[in-house]
Length: 432
Image (cartoon, rainbow, N blue to C red):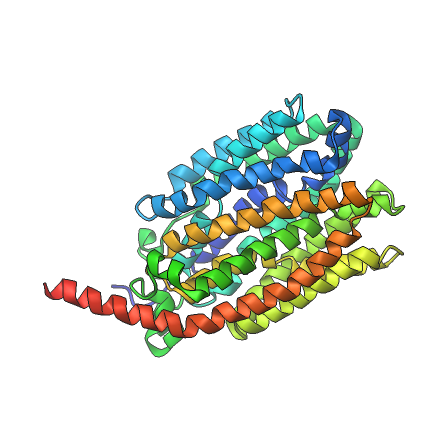
């Protein structure tokens, strides 16, 4: 058994690879889609709320398959299925360019959602957890920052393409860039476990001296999926995740529509969106350090206060430069959507059945996204303003705070109780 890691730790290359995957799958595929709402709904002759329902079909597709992927990846390697997922998701993005009506968008989005679990969610979070015991929050923050980086870079590019050549050309552009990034990165850079290279995870040598690190390193410590479902920890946690996704996506996907409706031109609105995505990059890294250094409760307060404040700023900050102030605050707070579940799930449920529990948490994120975007767009269709929806999201931020802090509080007792029961049962089986 090796006693020391080499000076350079390959896990950081894995982080870079995961960053590129997030950049393509979330930043390019997801965070640029607000550019298409106005031109697509106008061209197809449907209301914005009707058009944005296609994102709900995508989320619902992912919702039904998330528990399956959690169970599936418990006993299967990731890389072959990640490559297959790339092919299907990229093909769906190209298929959008061929859509002739809104129902085509619904069907394509549902297919994309079903297979999205092959690429993101369980694979990325589990691979990073395999490589990092220490600095896990920092590693996840860097990797997940890829979504903001790509969203910031691609939004003005895609916006210009759509303006010059139409929305169909925009979707083709996204598909090409997505393929060019994901396939080589997964094939070459990603290694699923340090043991595959004769290495140990970062921090393994310190786990024995630190209870929290020991728990993170112990694959037998934690709740089973059945125990998690029965716990108060789980229900507070998943409702908080759902609201986080609903509020984050409800704000994010309506920035451009809200600003253009308040007199700003499309280029200015795209810049504001781009700034929020750019700030999201350091926002996730900062949040990762806050998780590692200060803890989940303080990080949750930091996130939710920022989310509520940004919703209010967007609703009422319709004079320059207030949209830029909104973009900075929202950029930091929007890390709530992607950072909570990969980091917190293992901490409050343990590693024993991580992928299975992750799989039954993911659907609640999908539900939140599926509801947040069309509901806020429907509020606009009914009232002619996004403001009532943004006010509801400001209140939602405070509810998320209460629920997530409650989940962490309940976990401190429930995790210990269930882990003790499971270890006793393991000992009985071993003795038998």
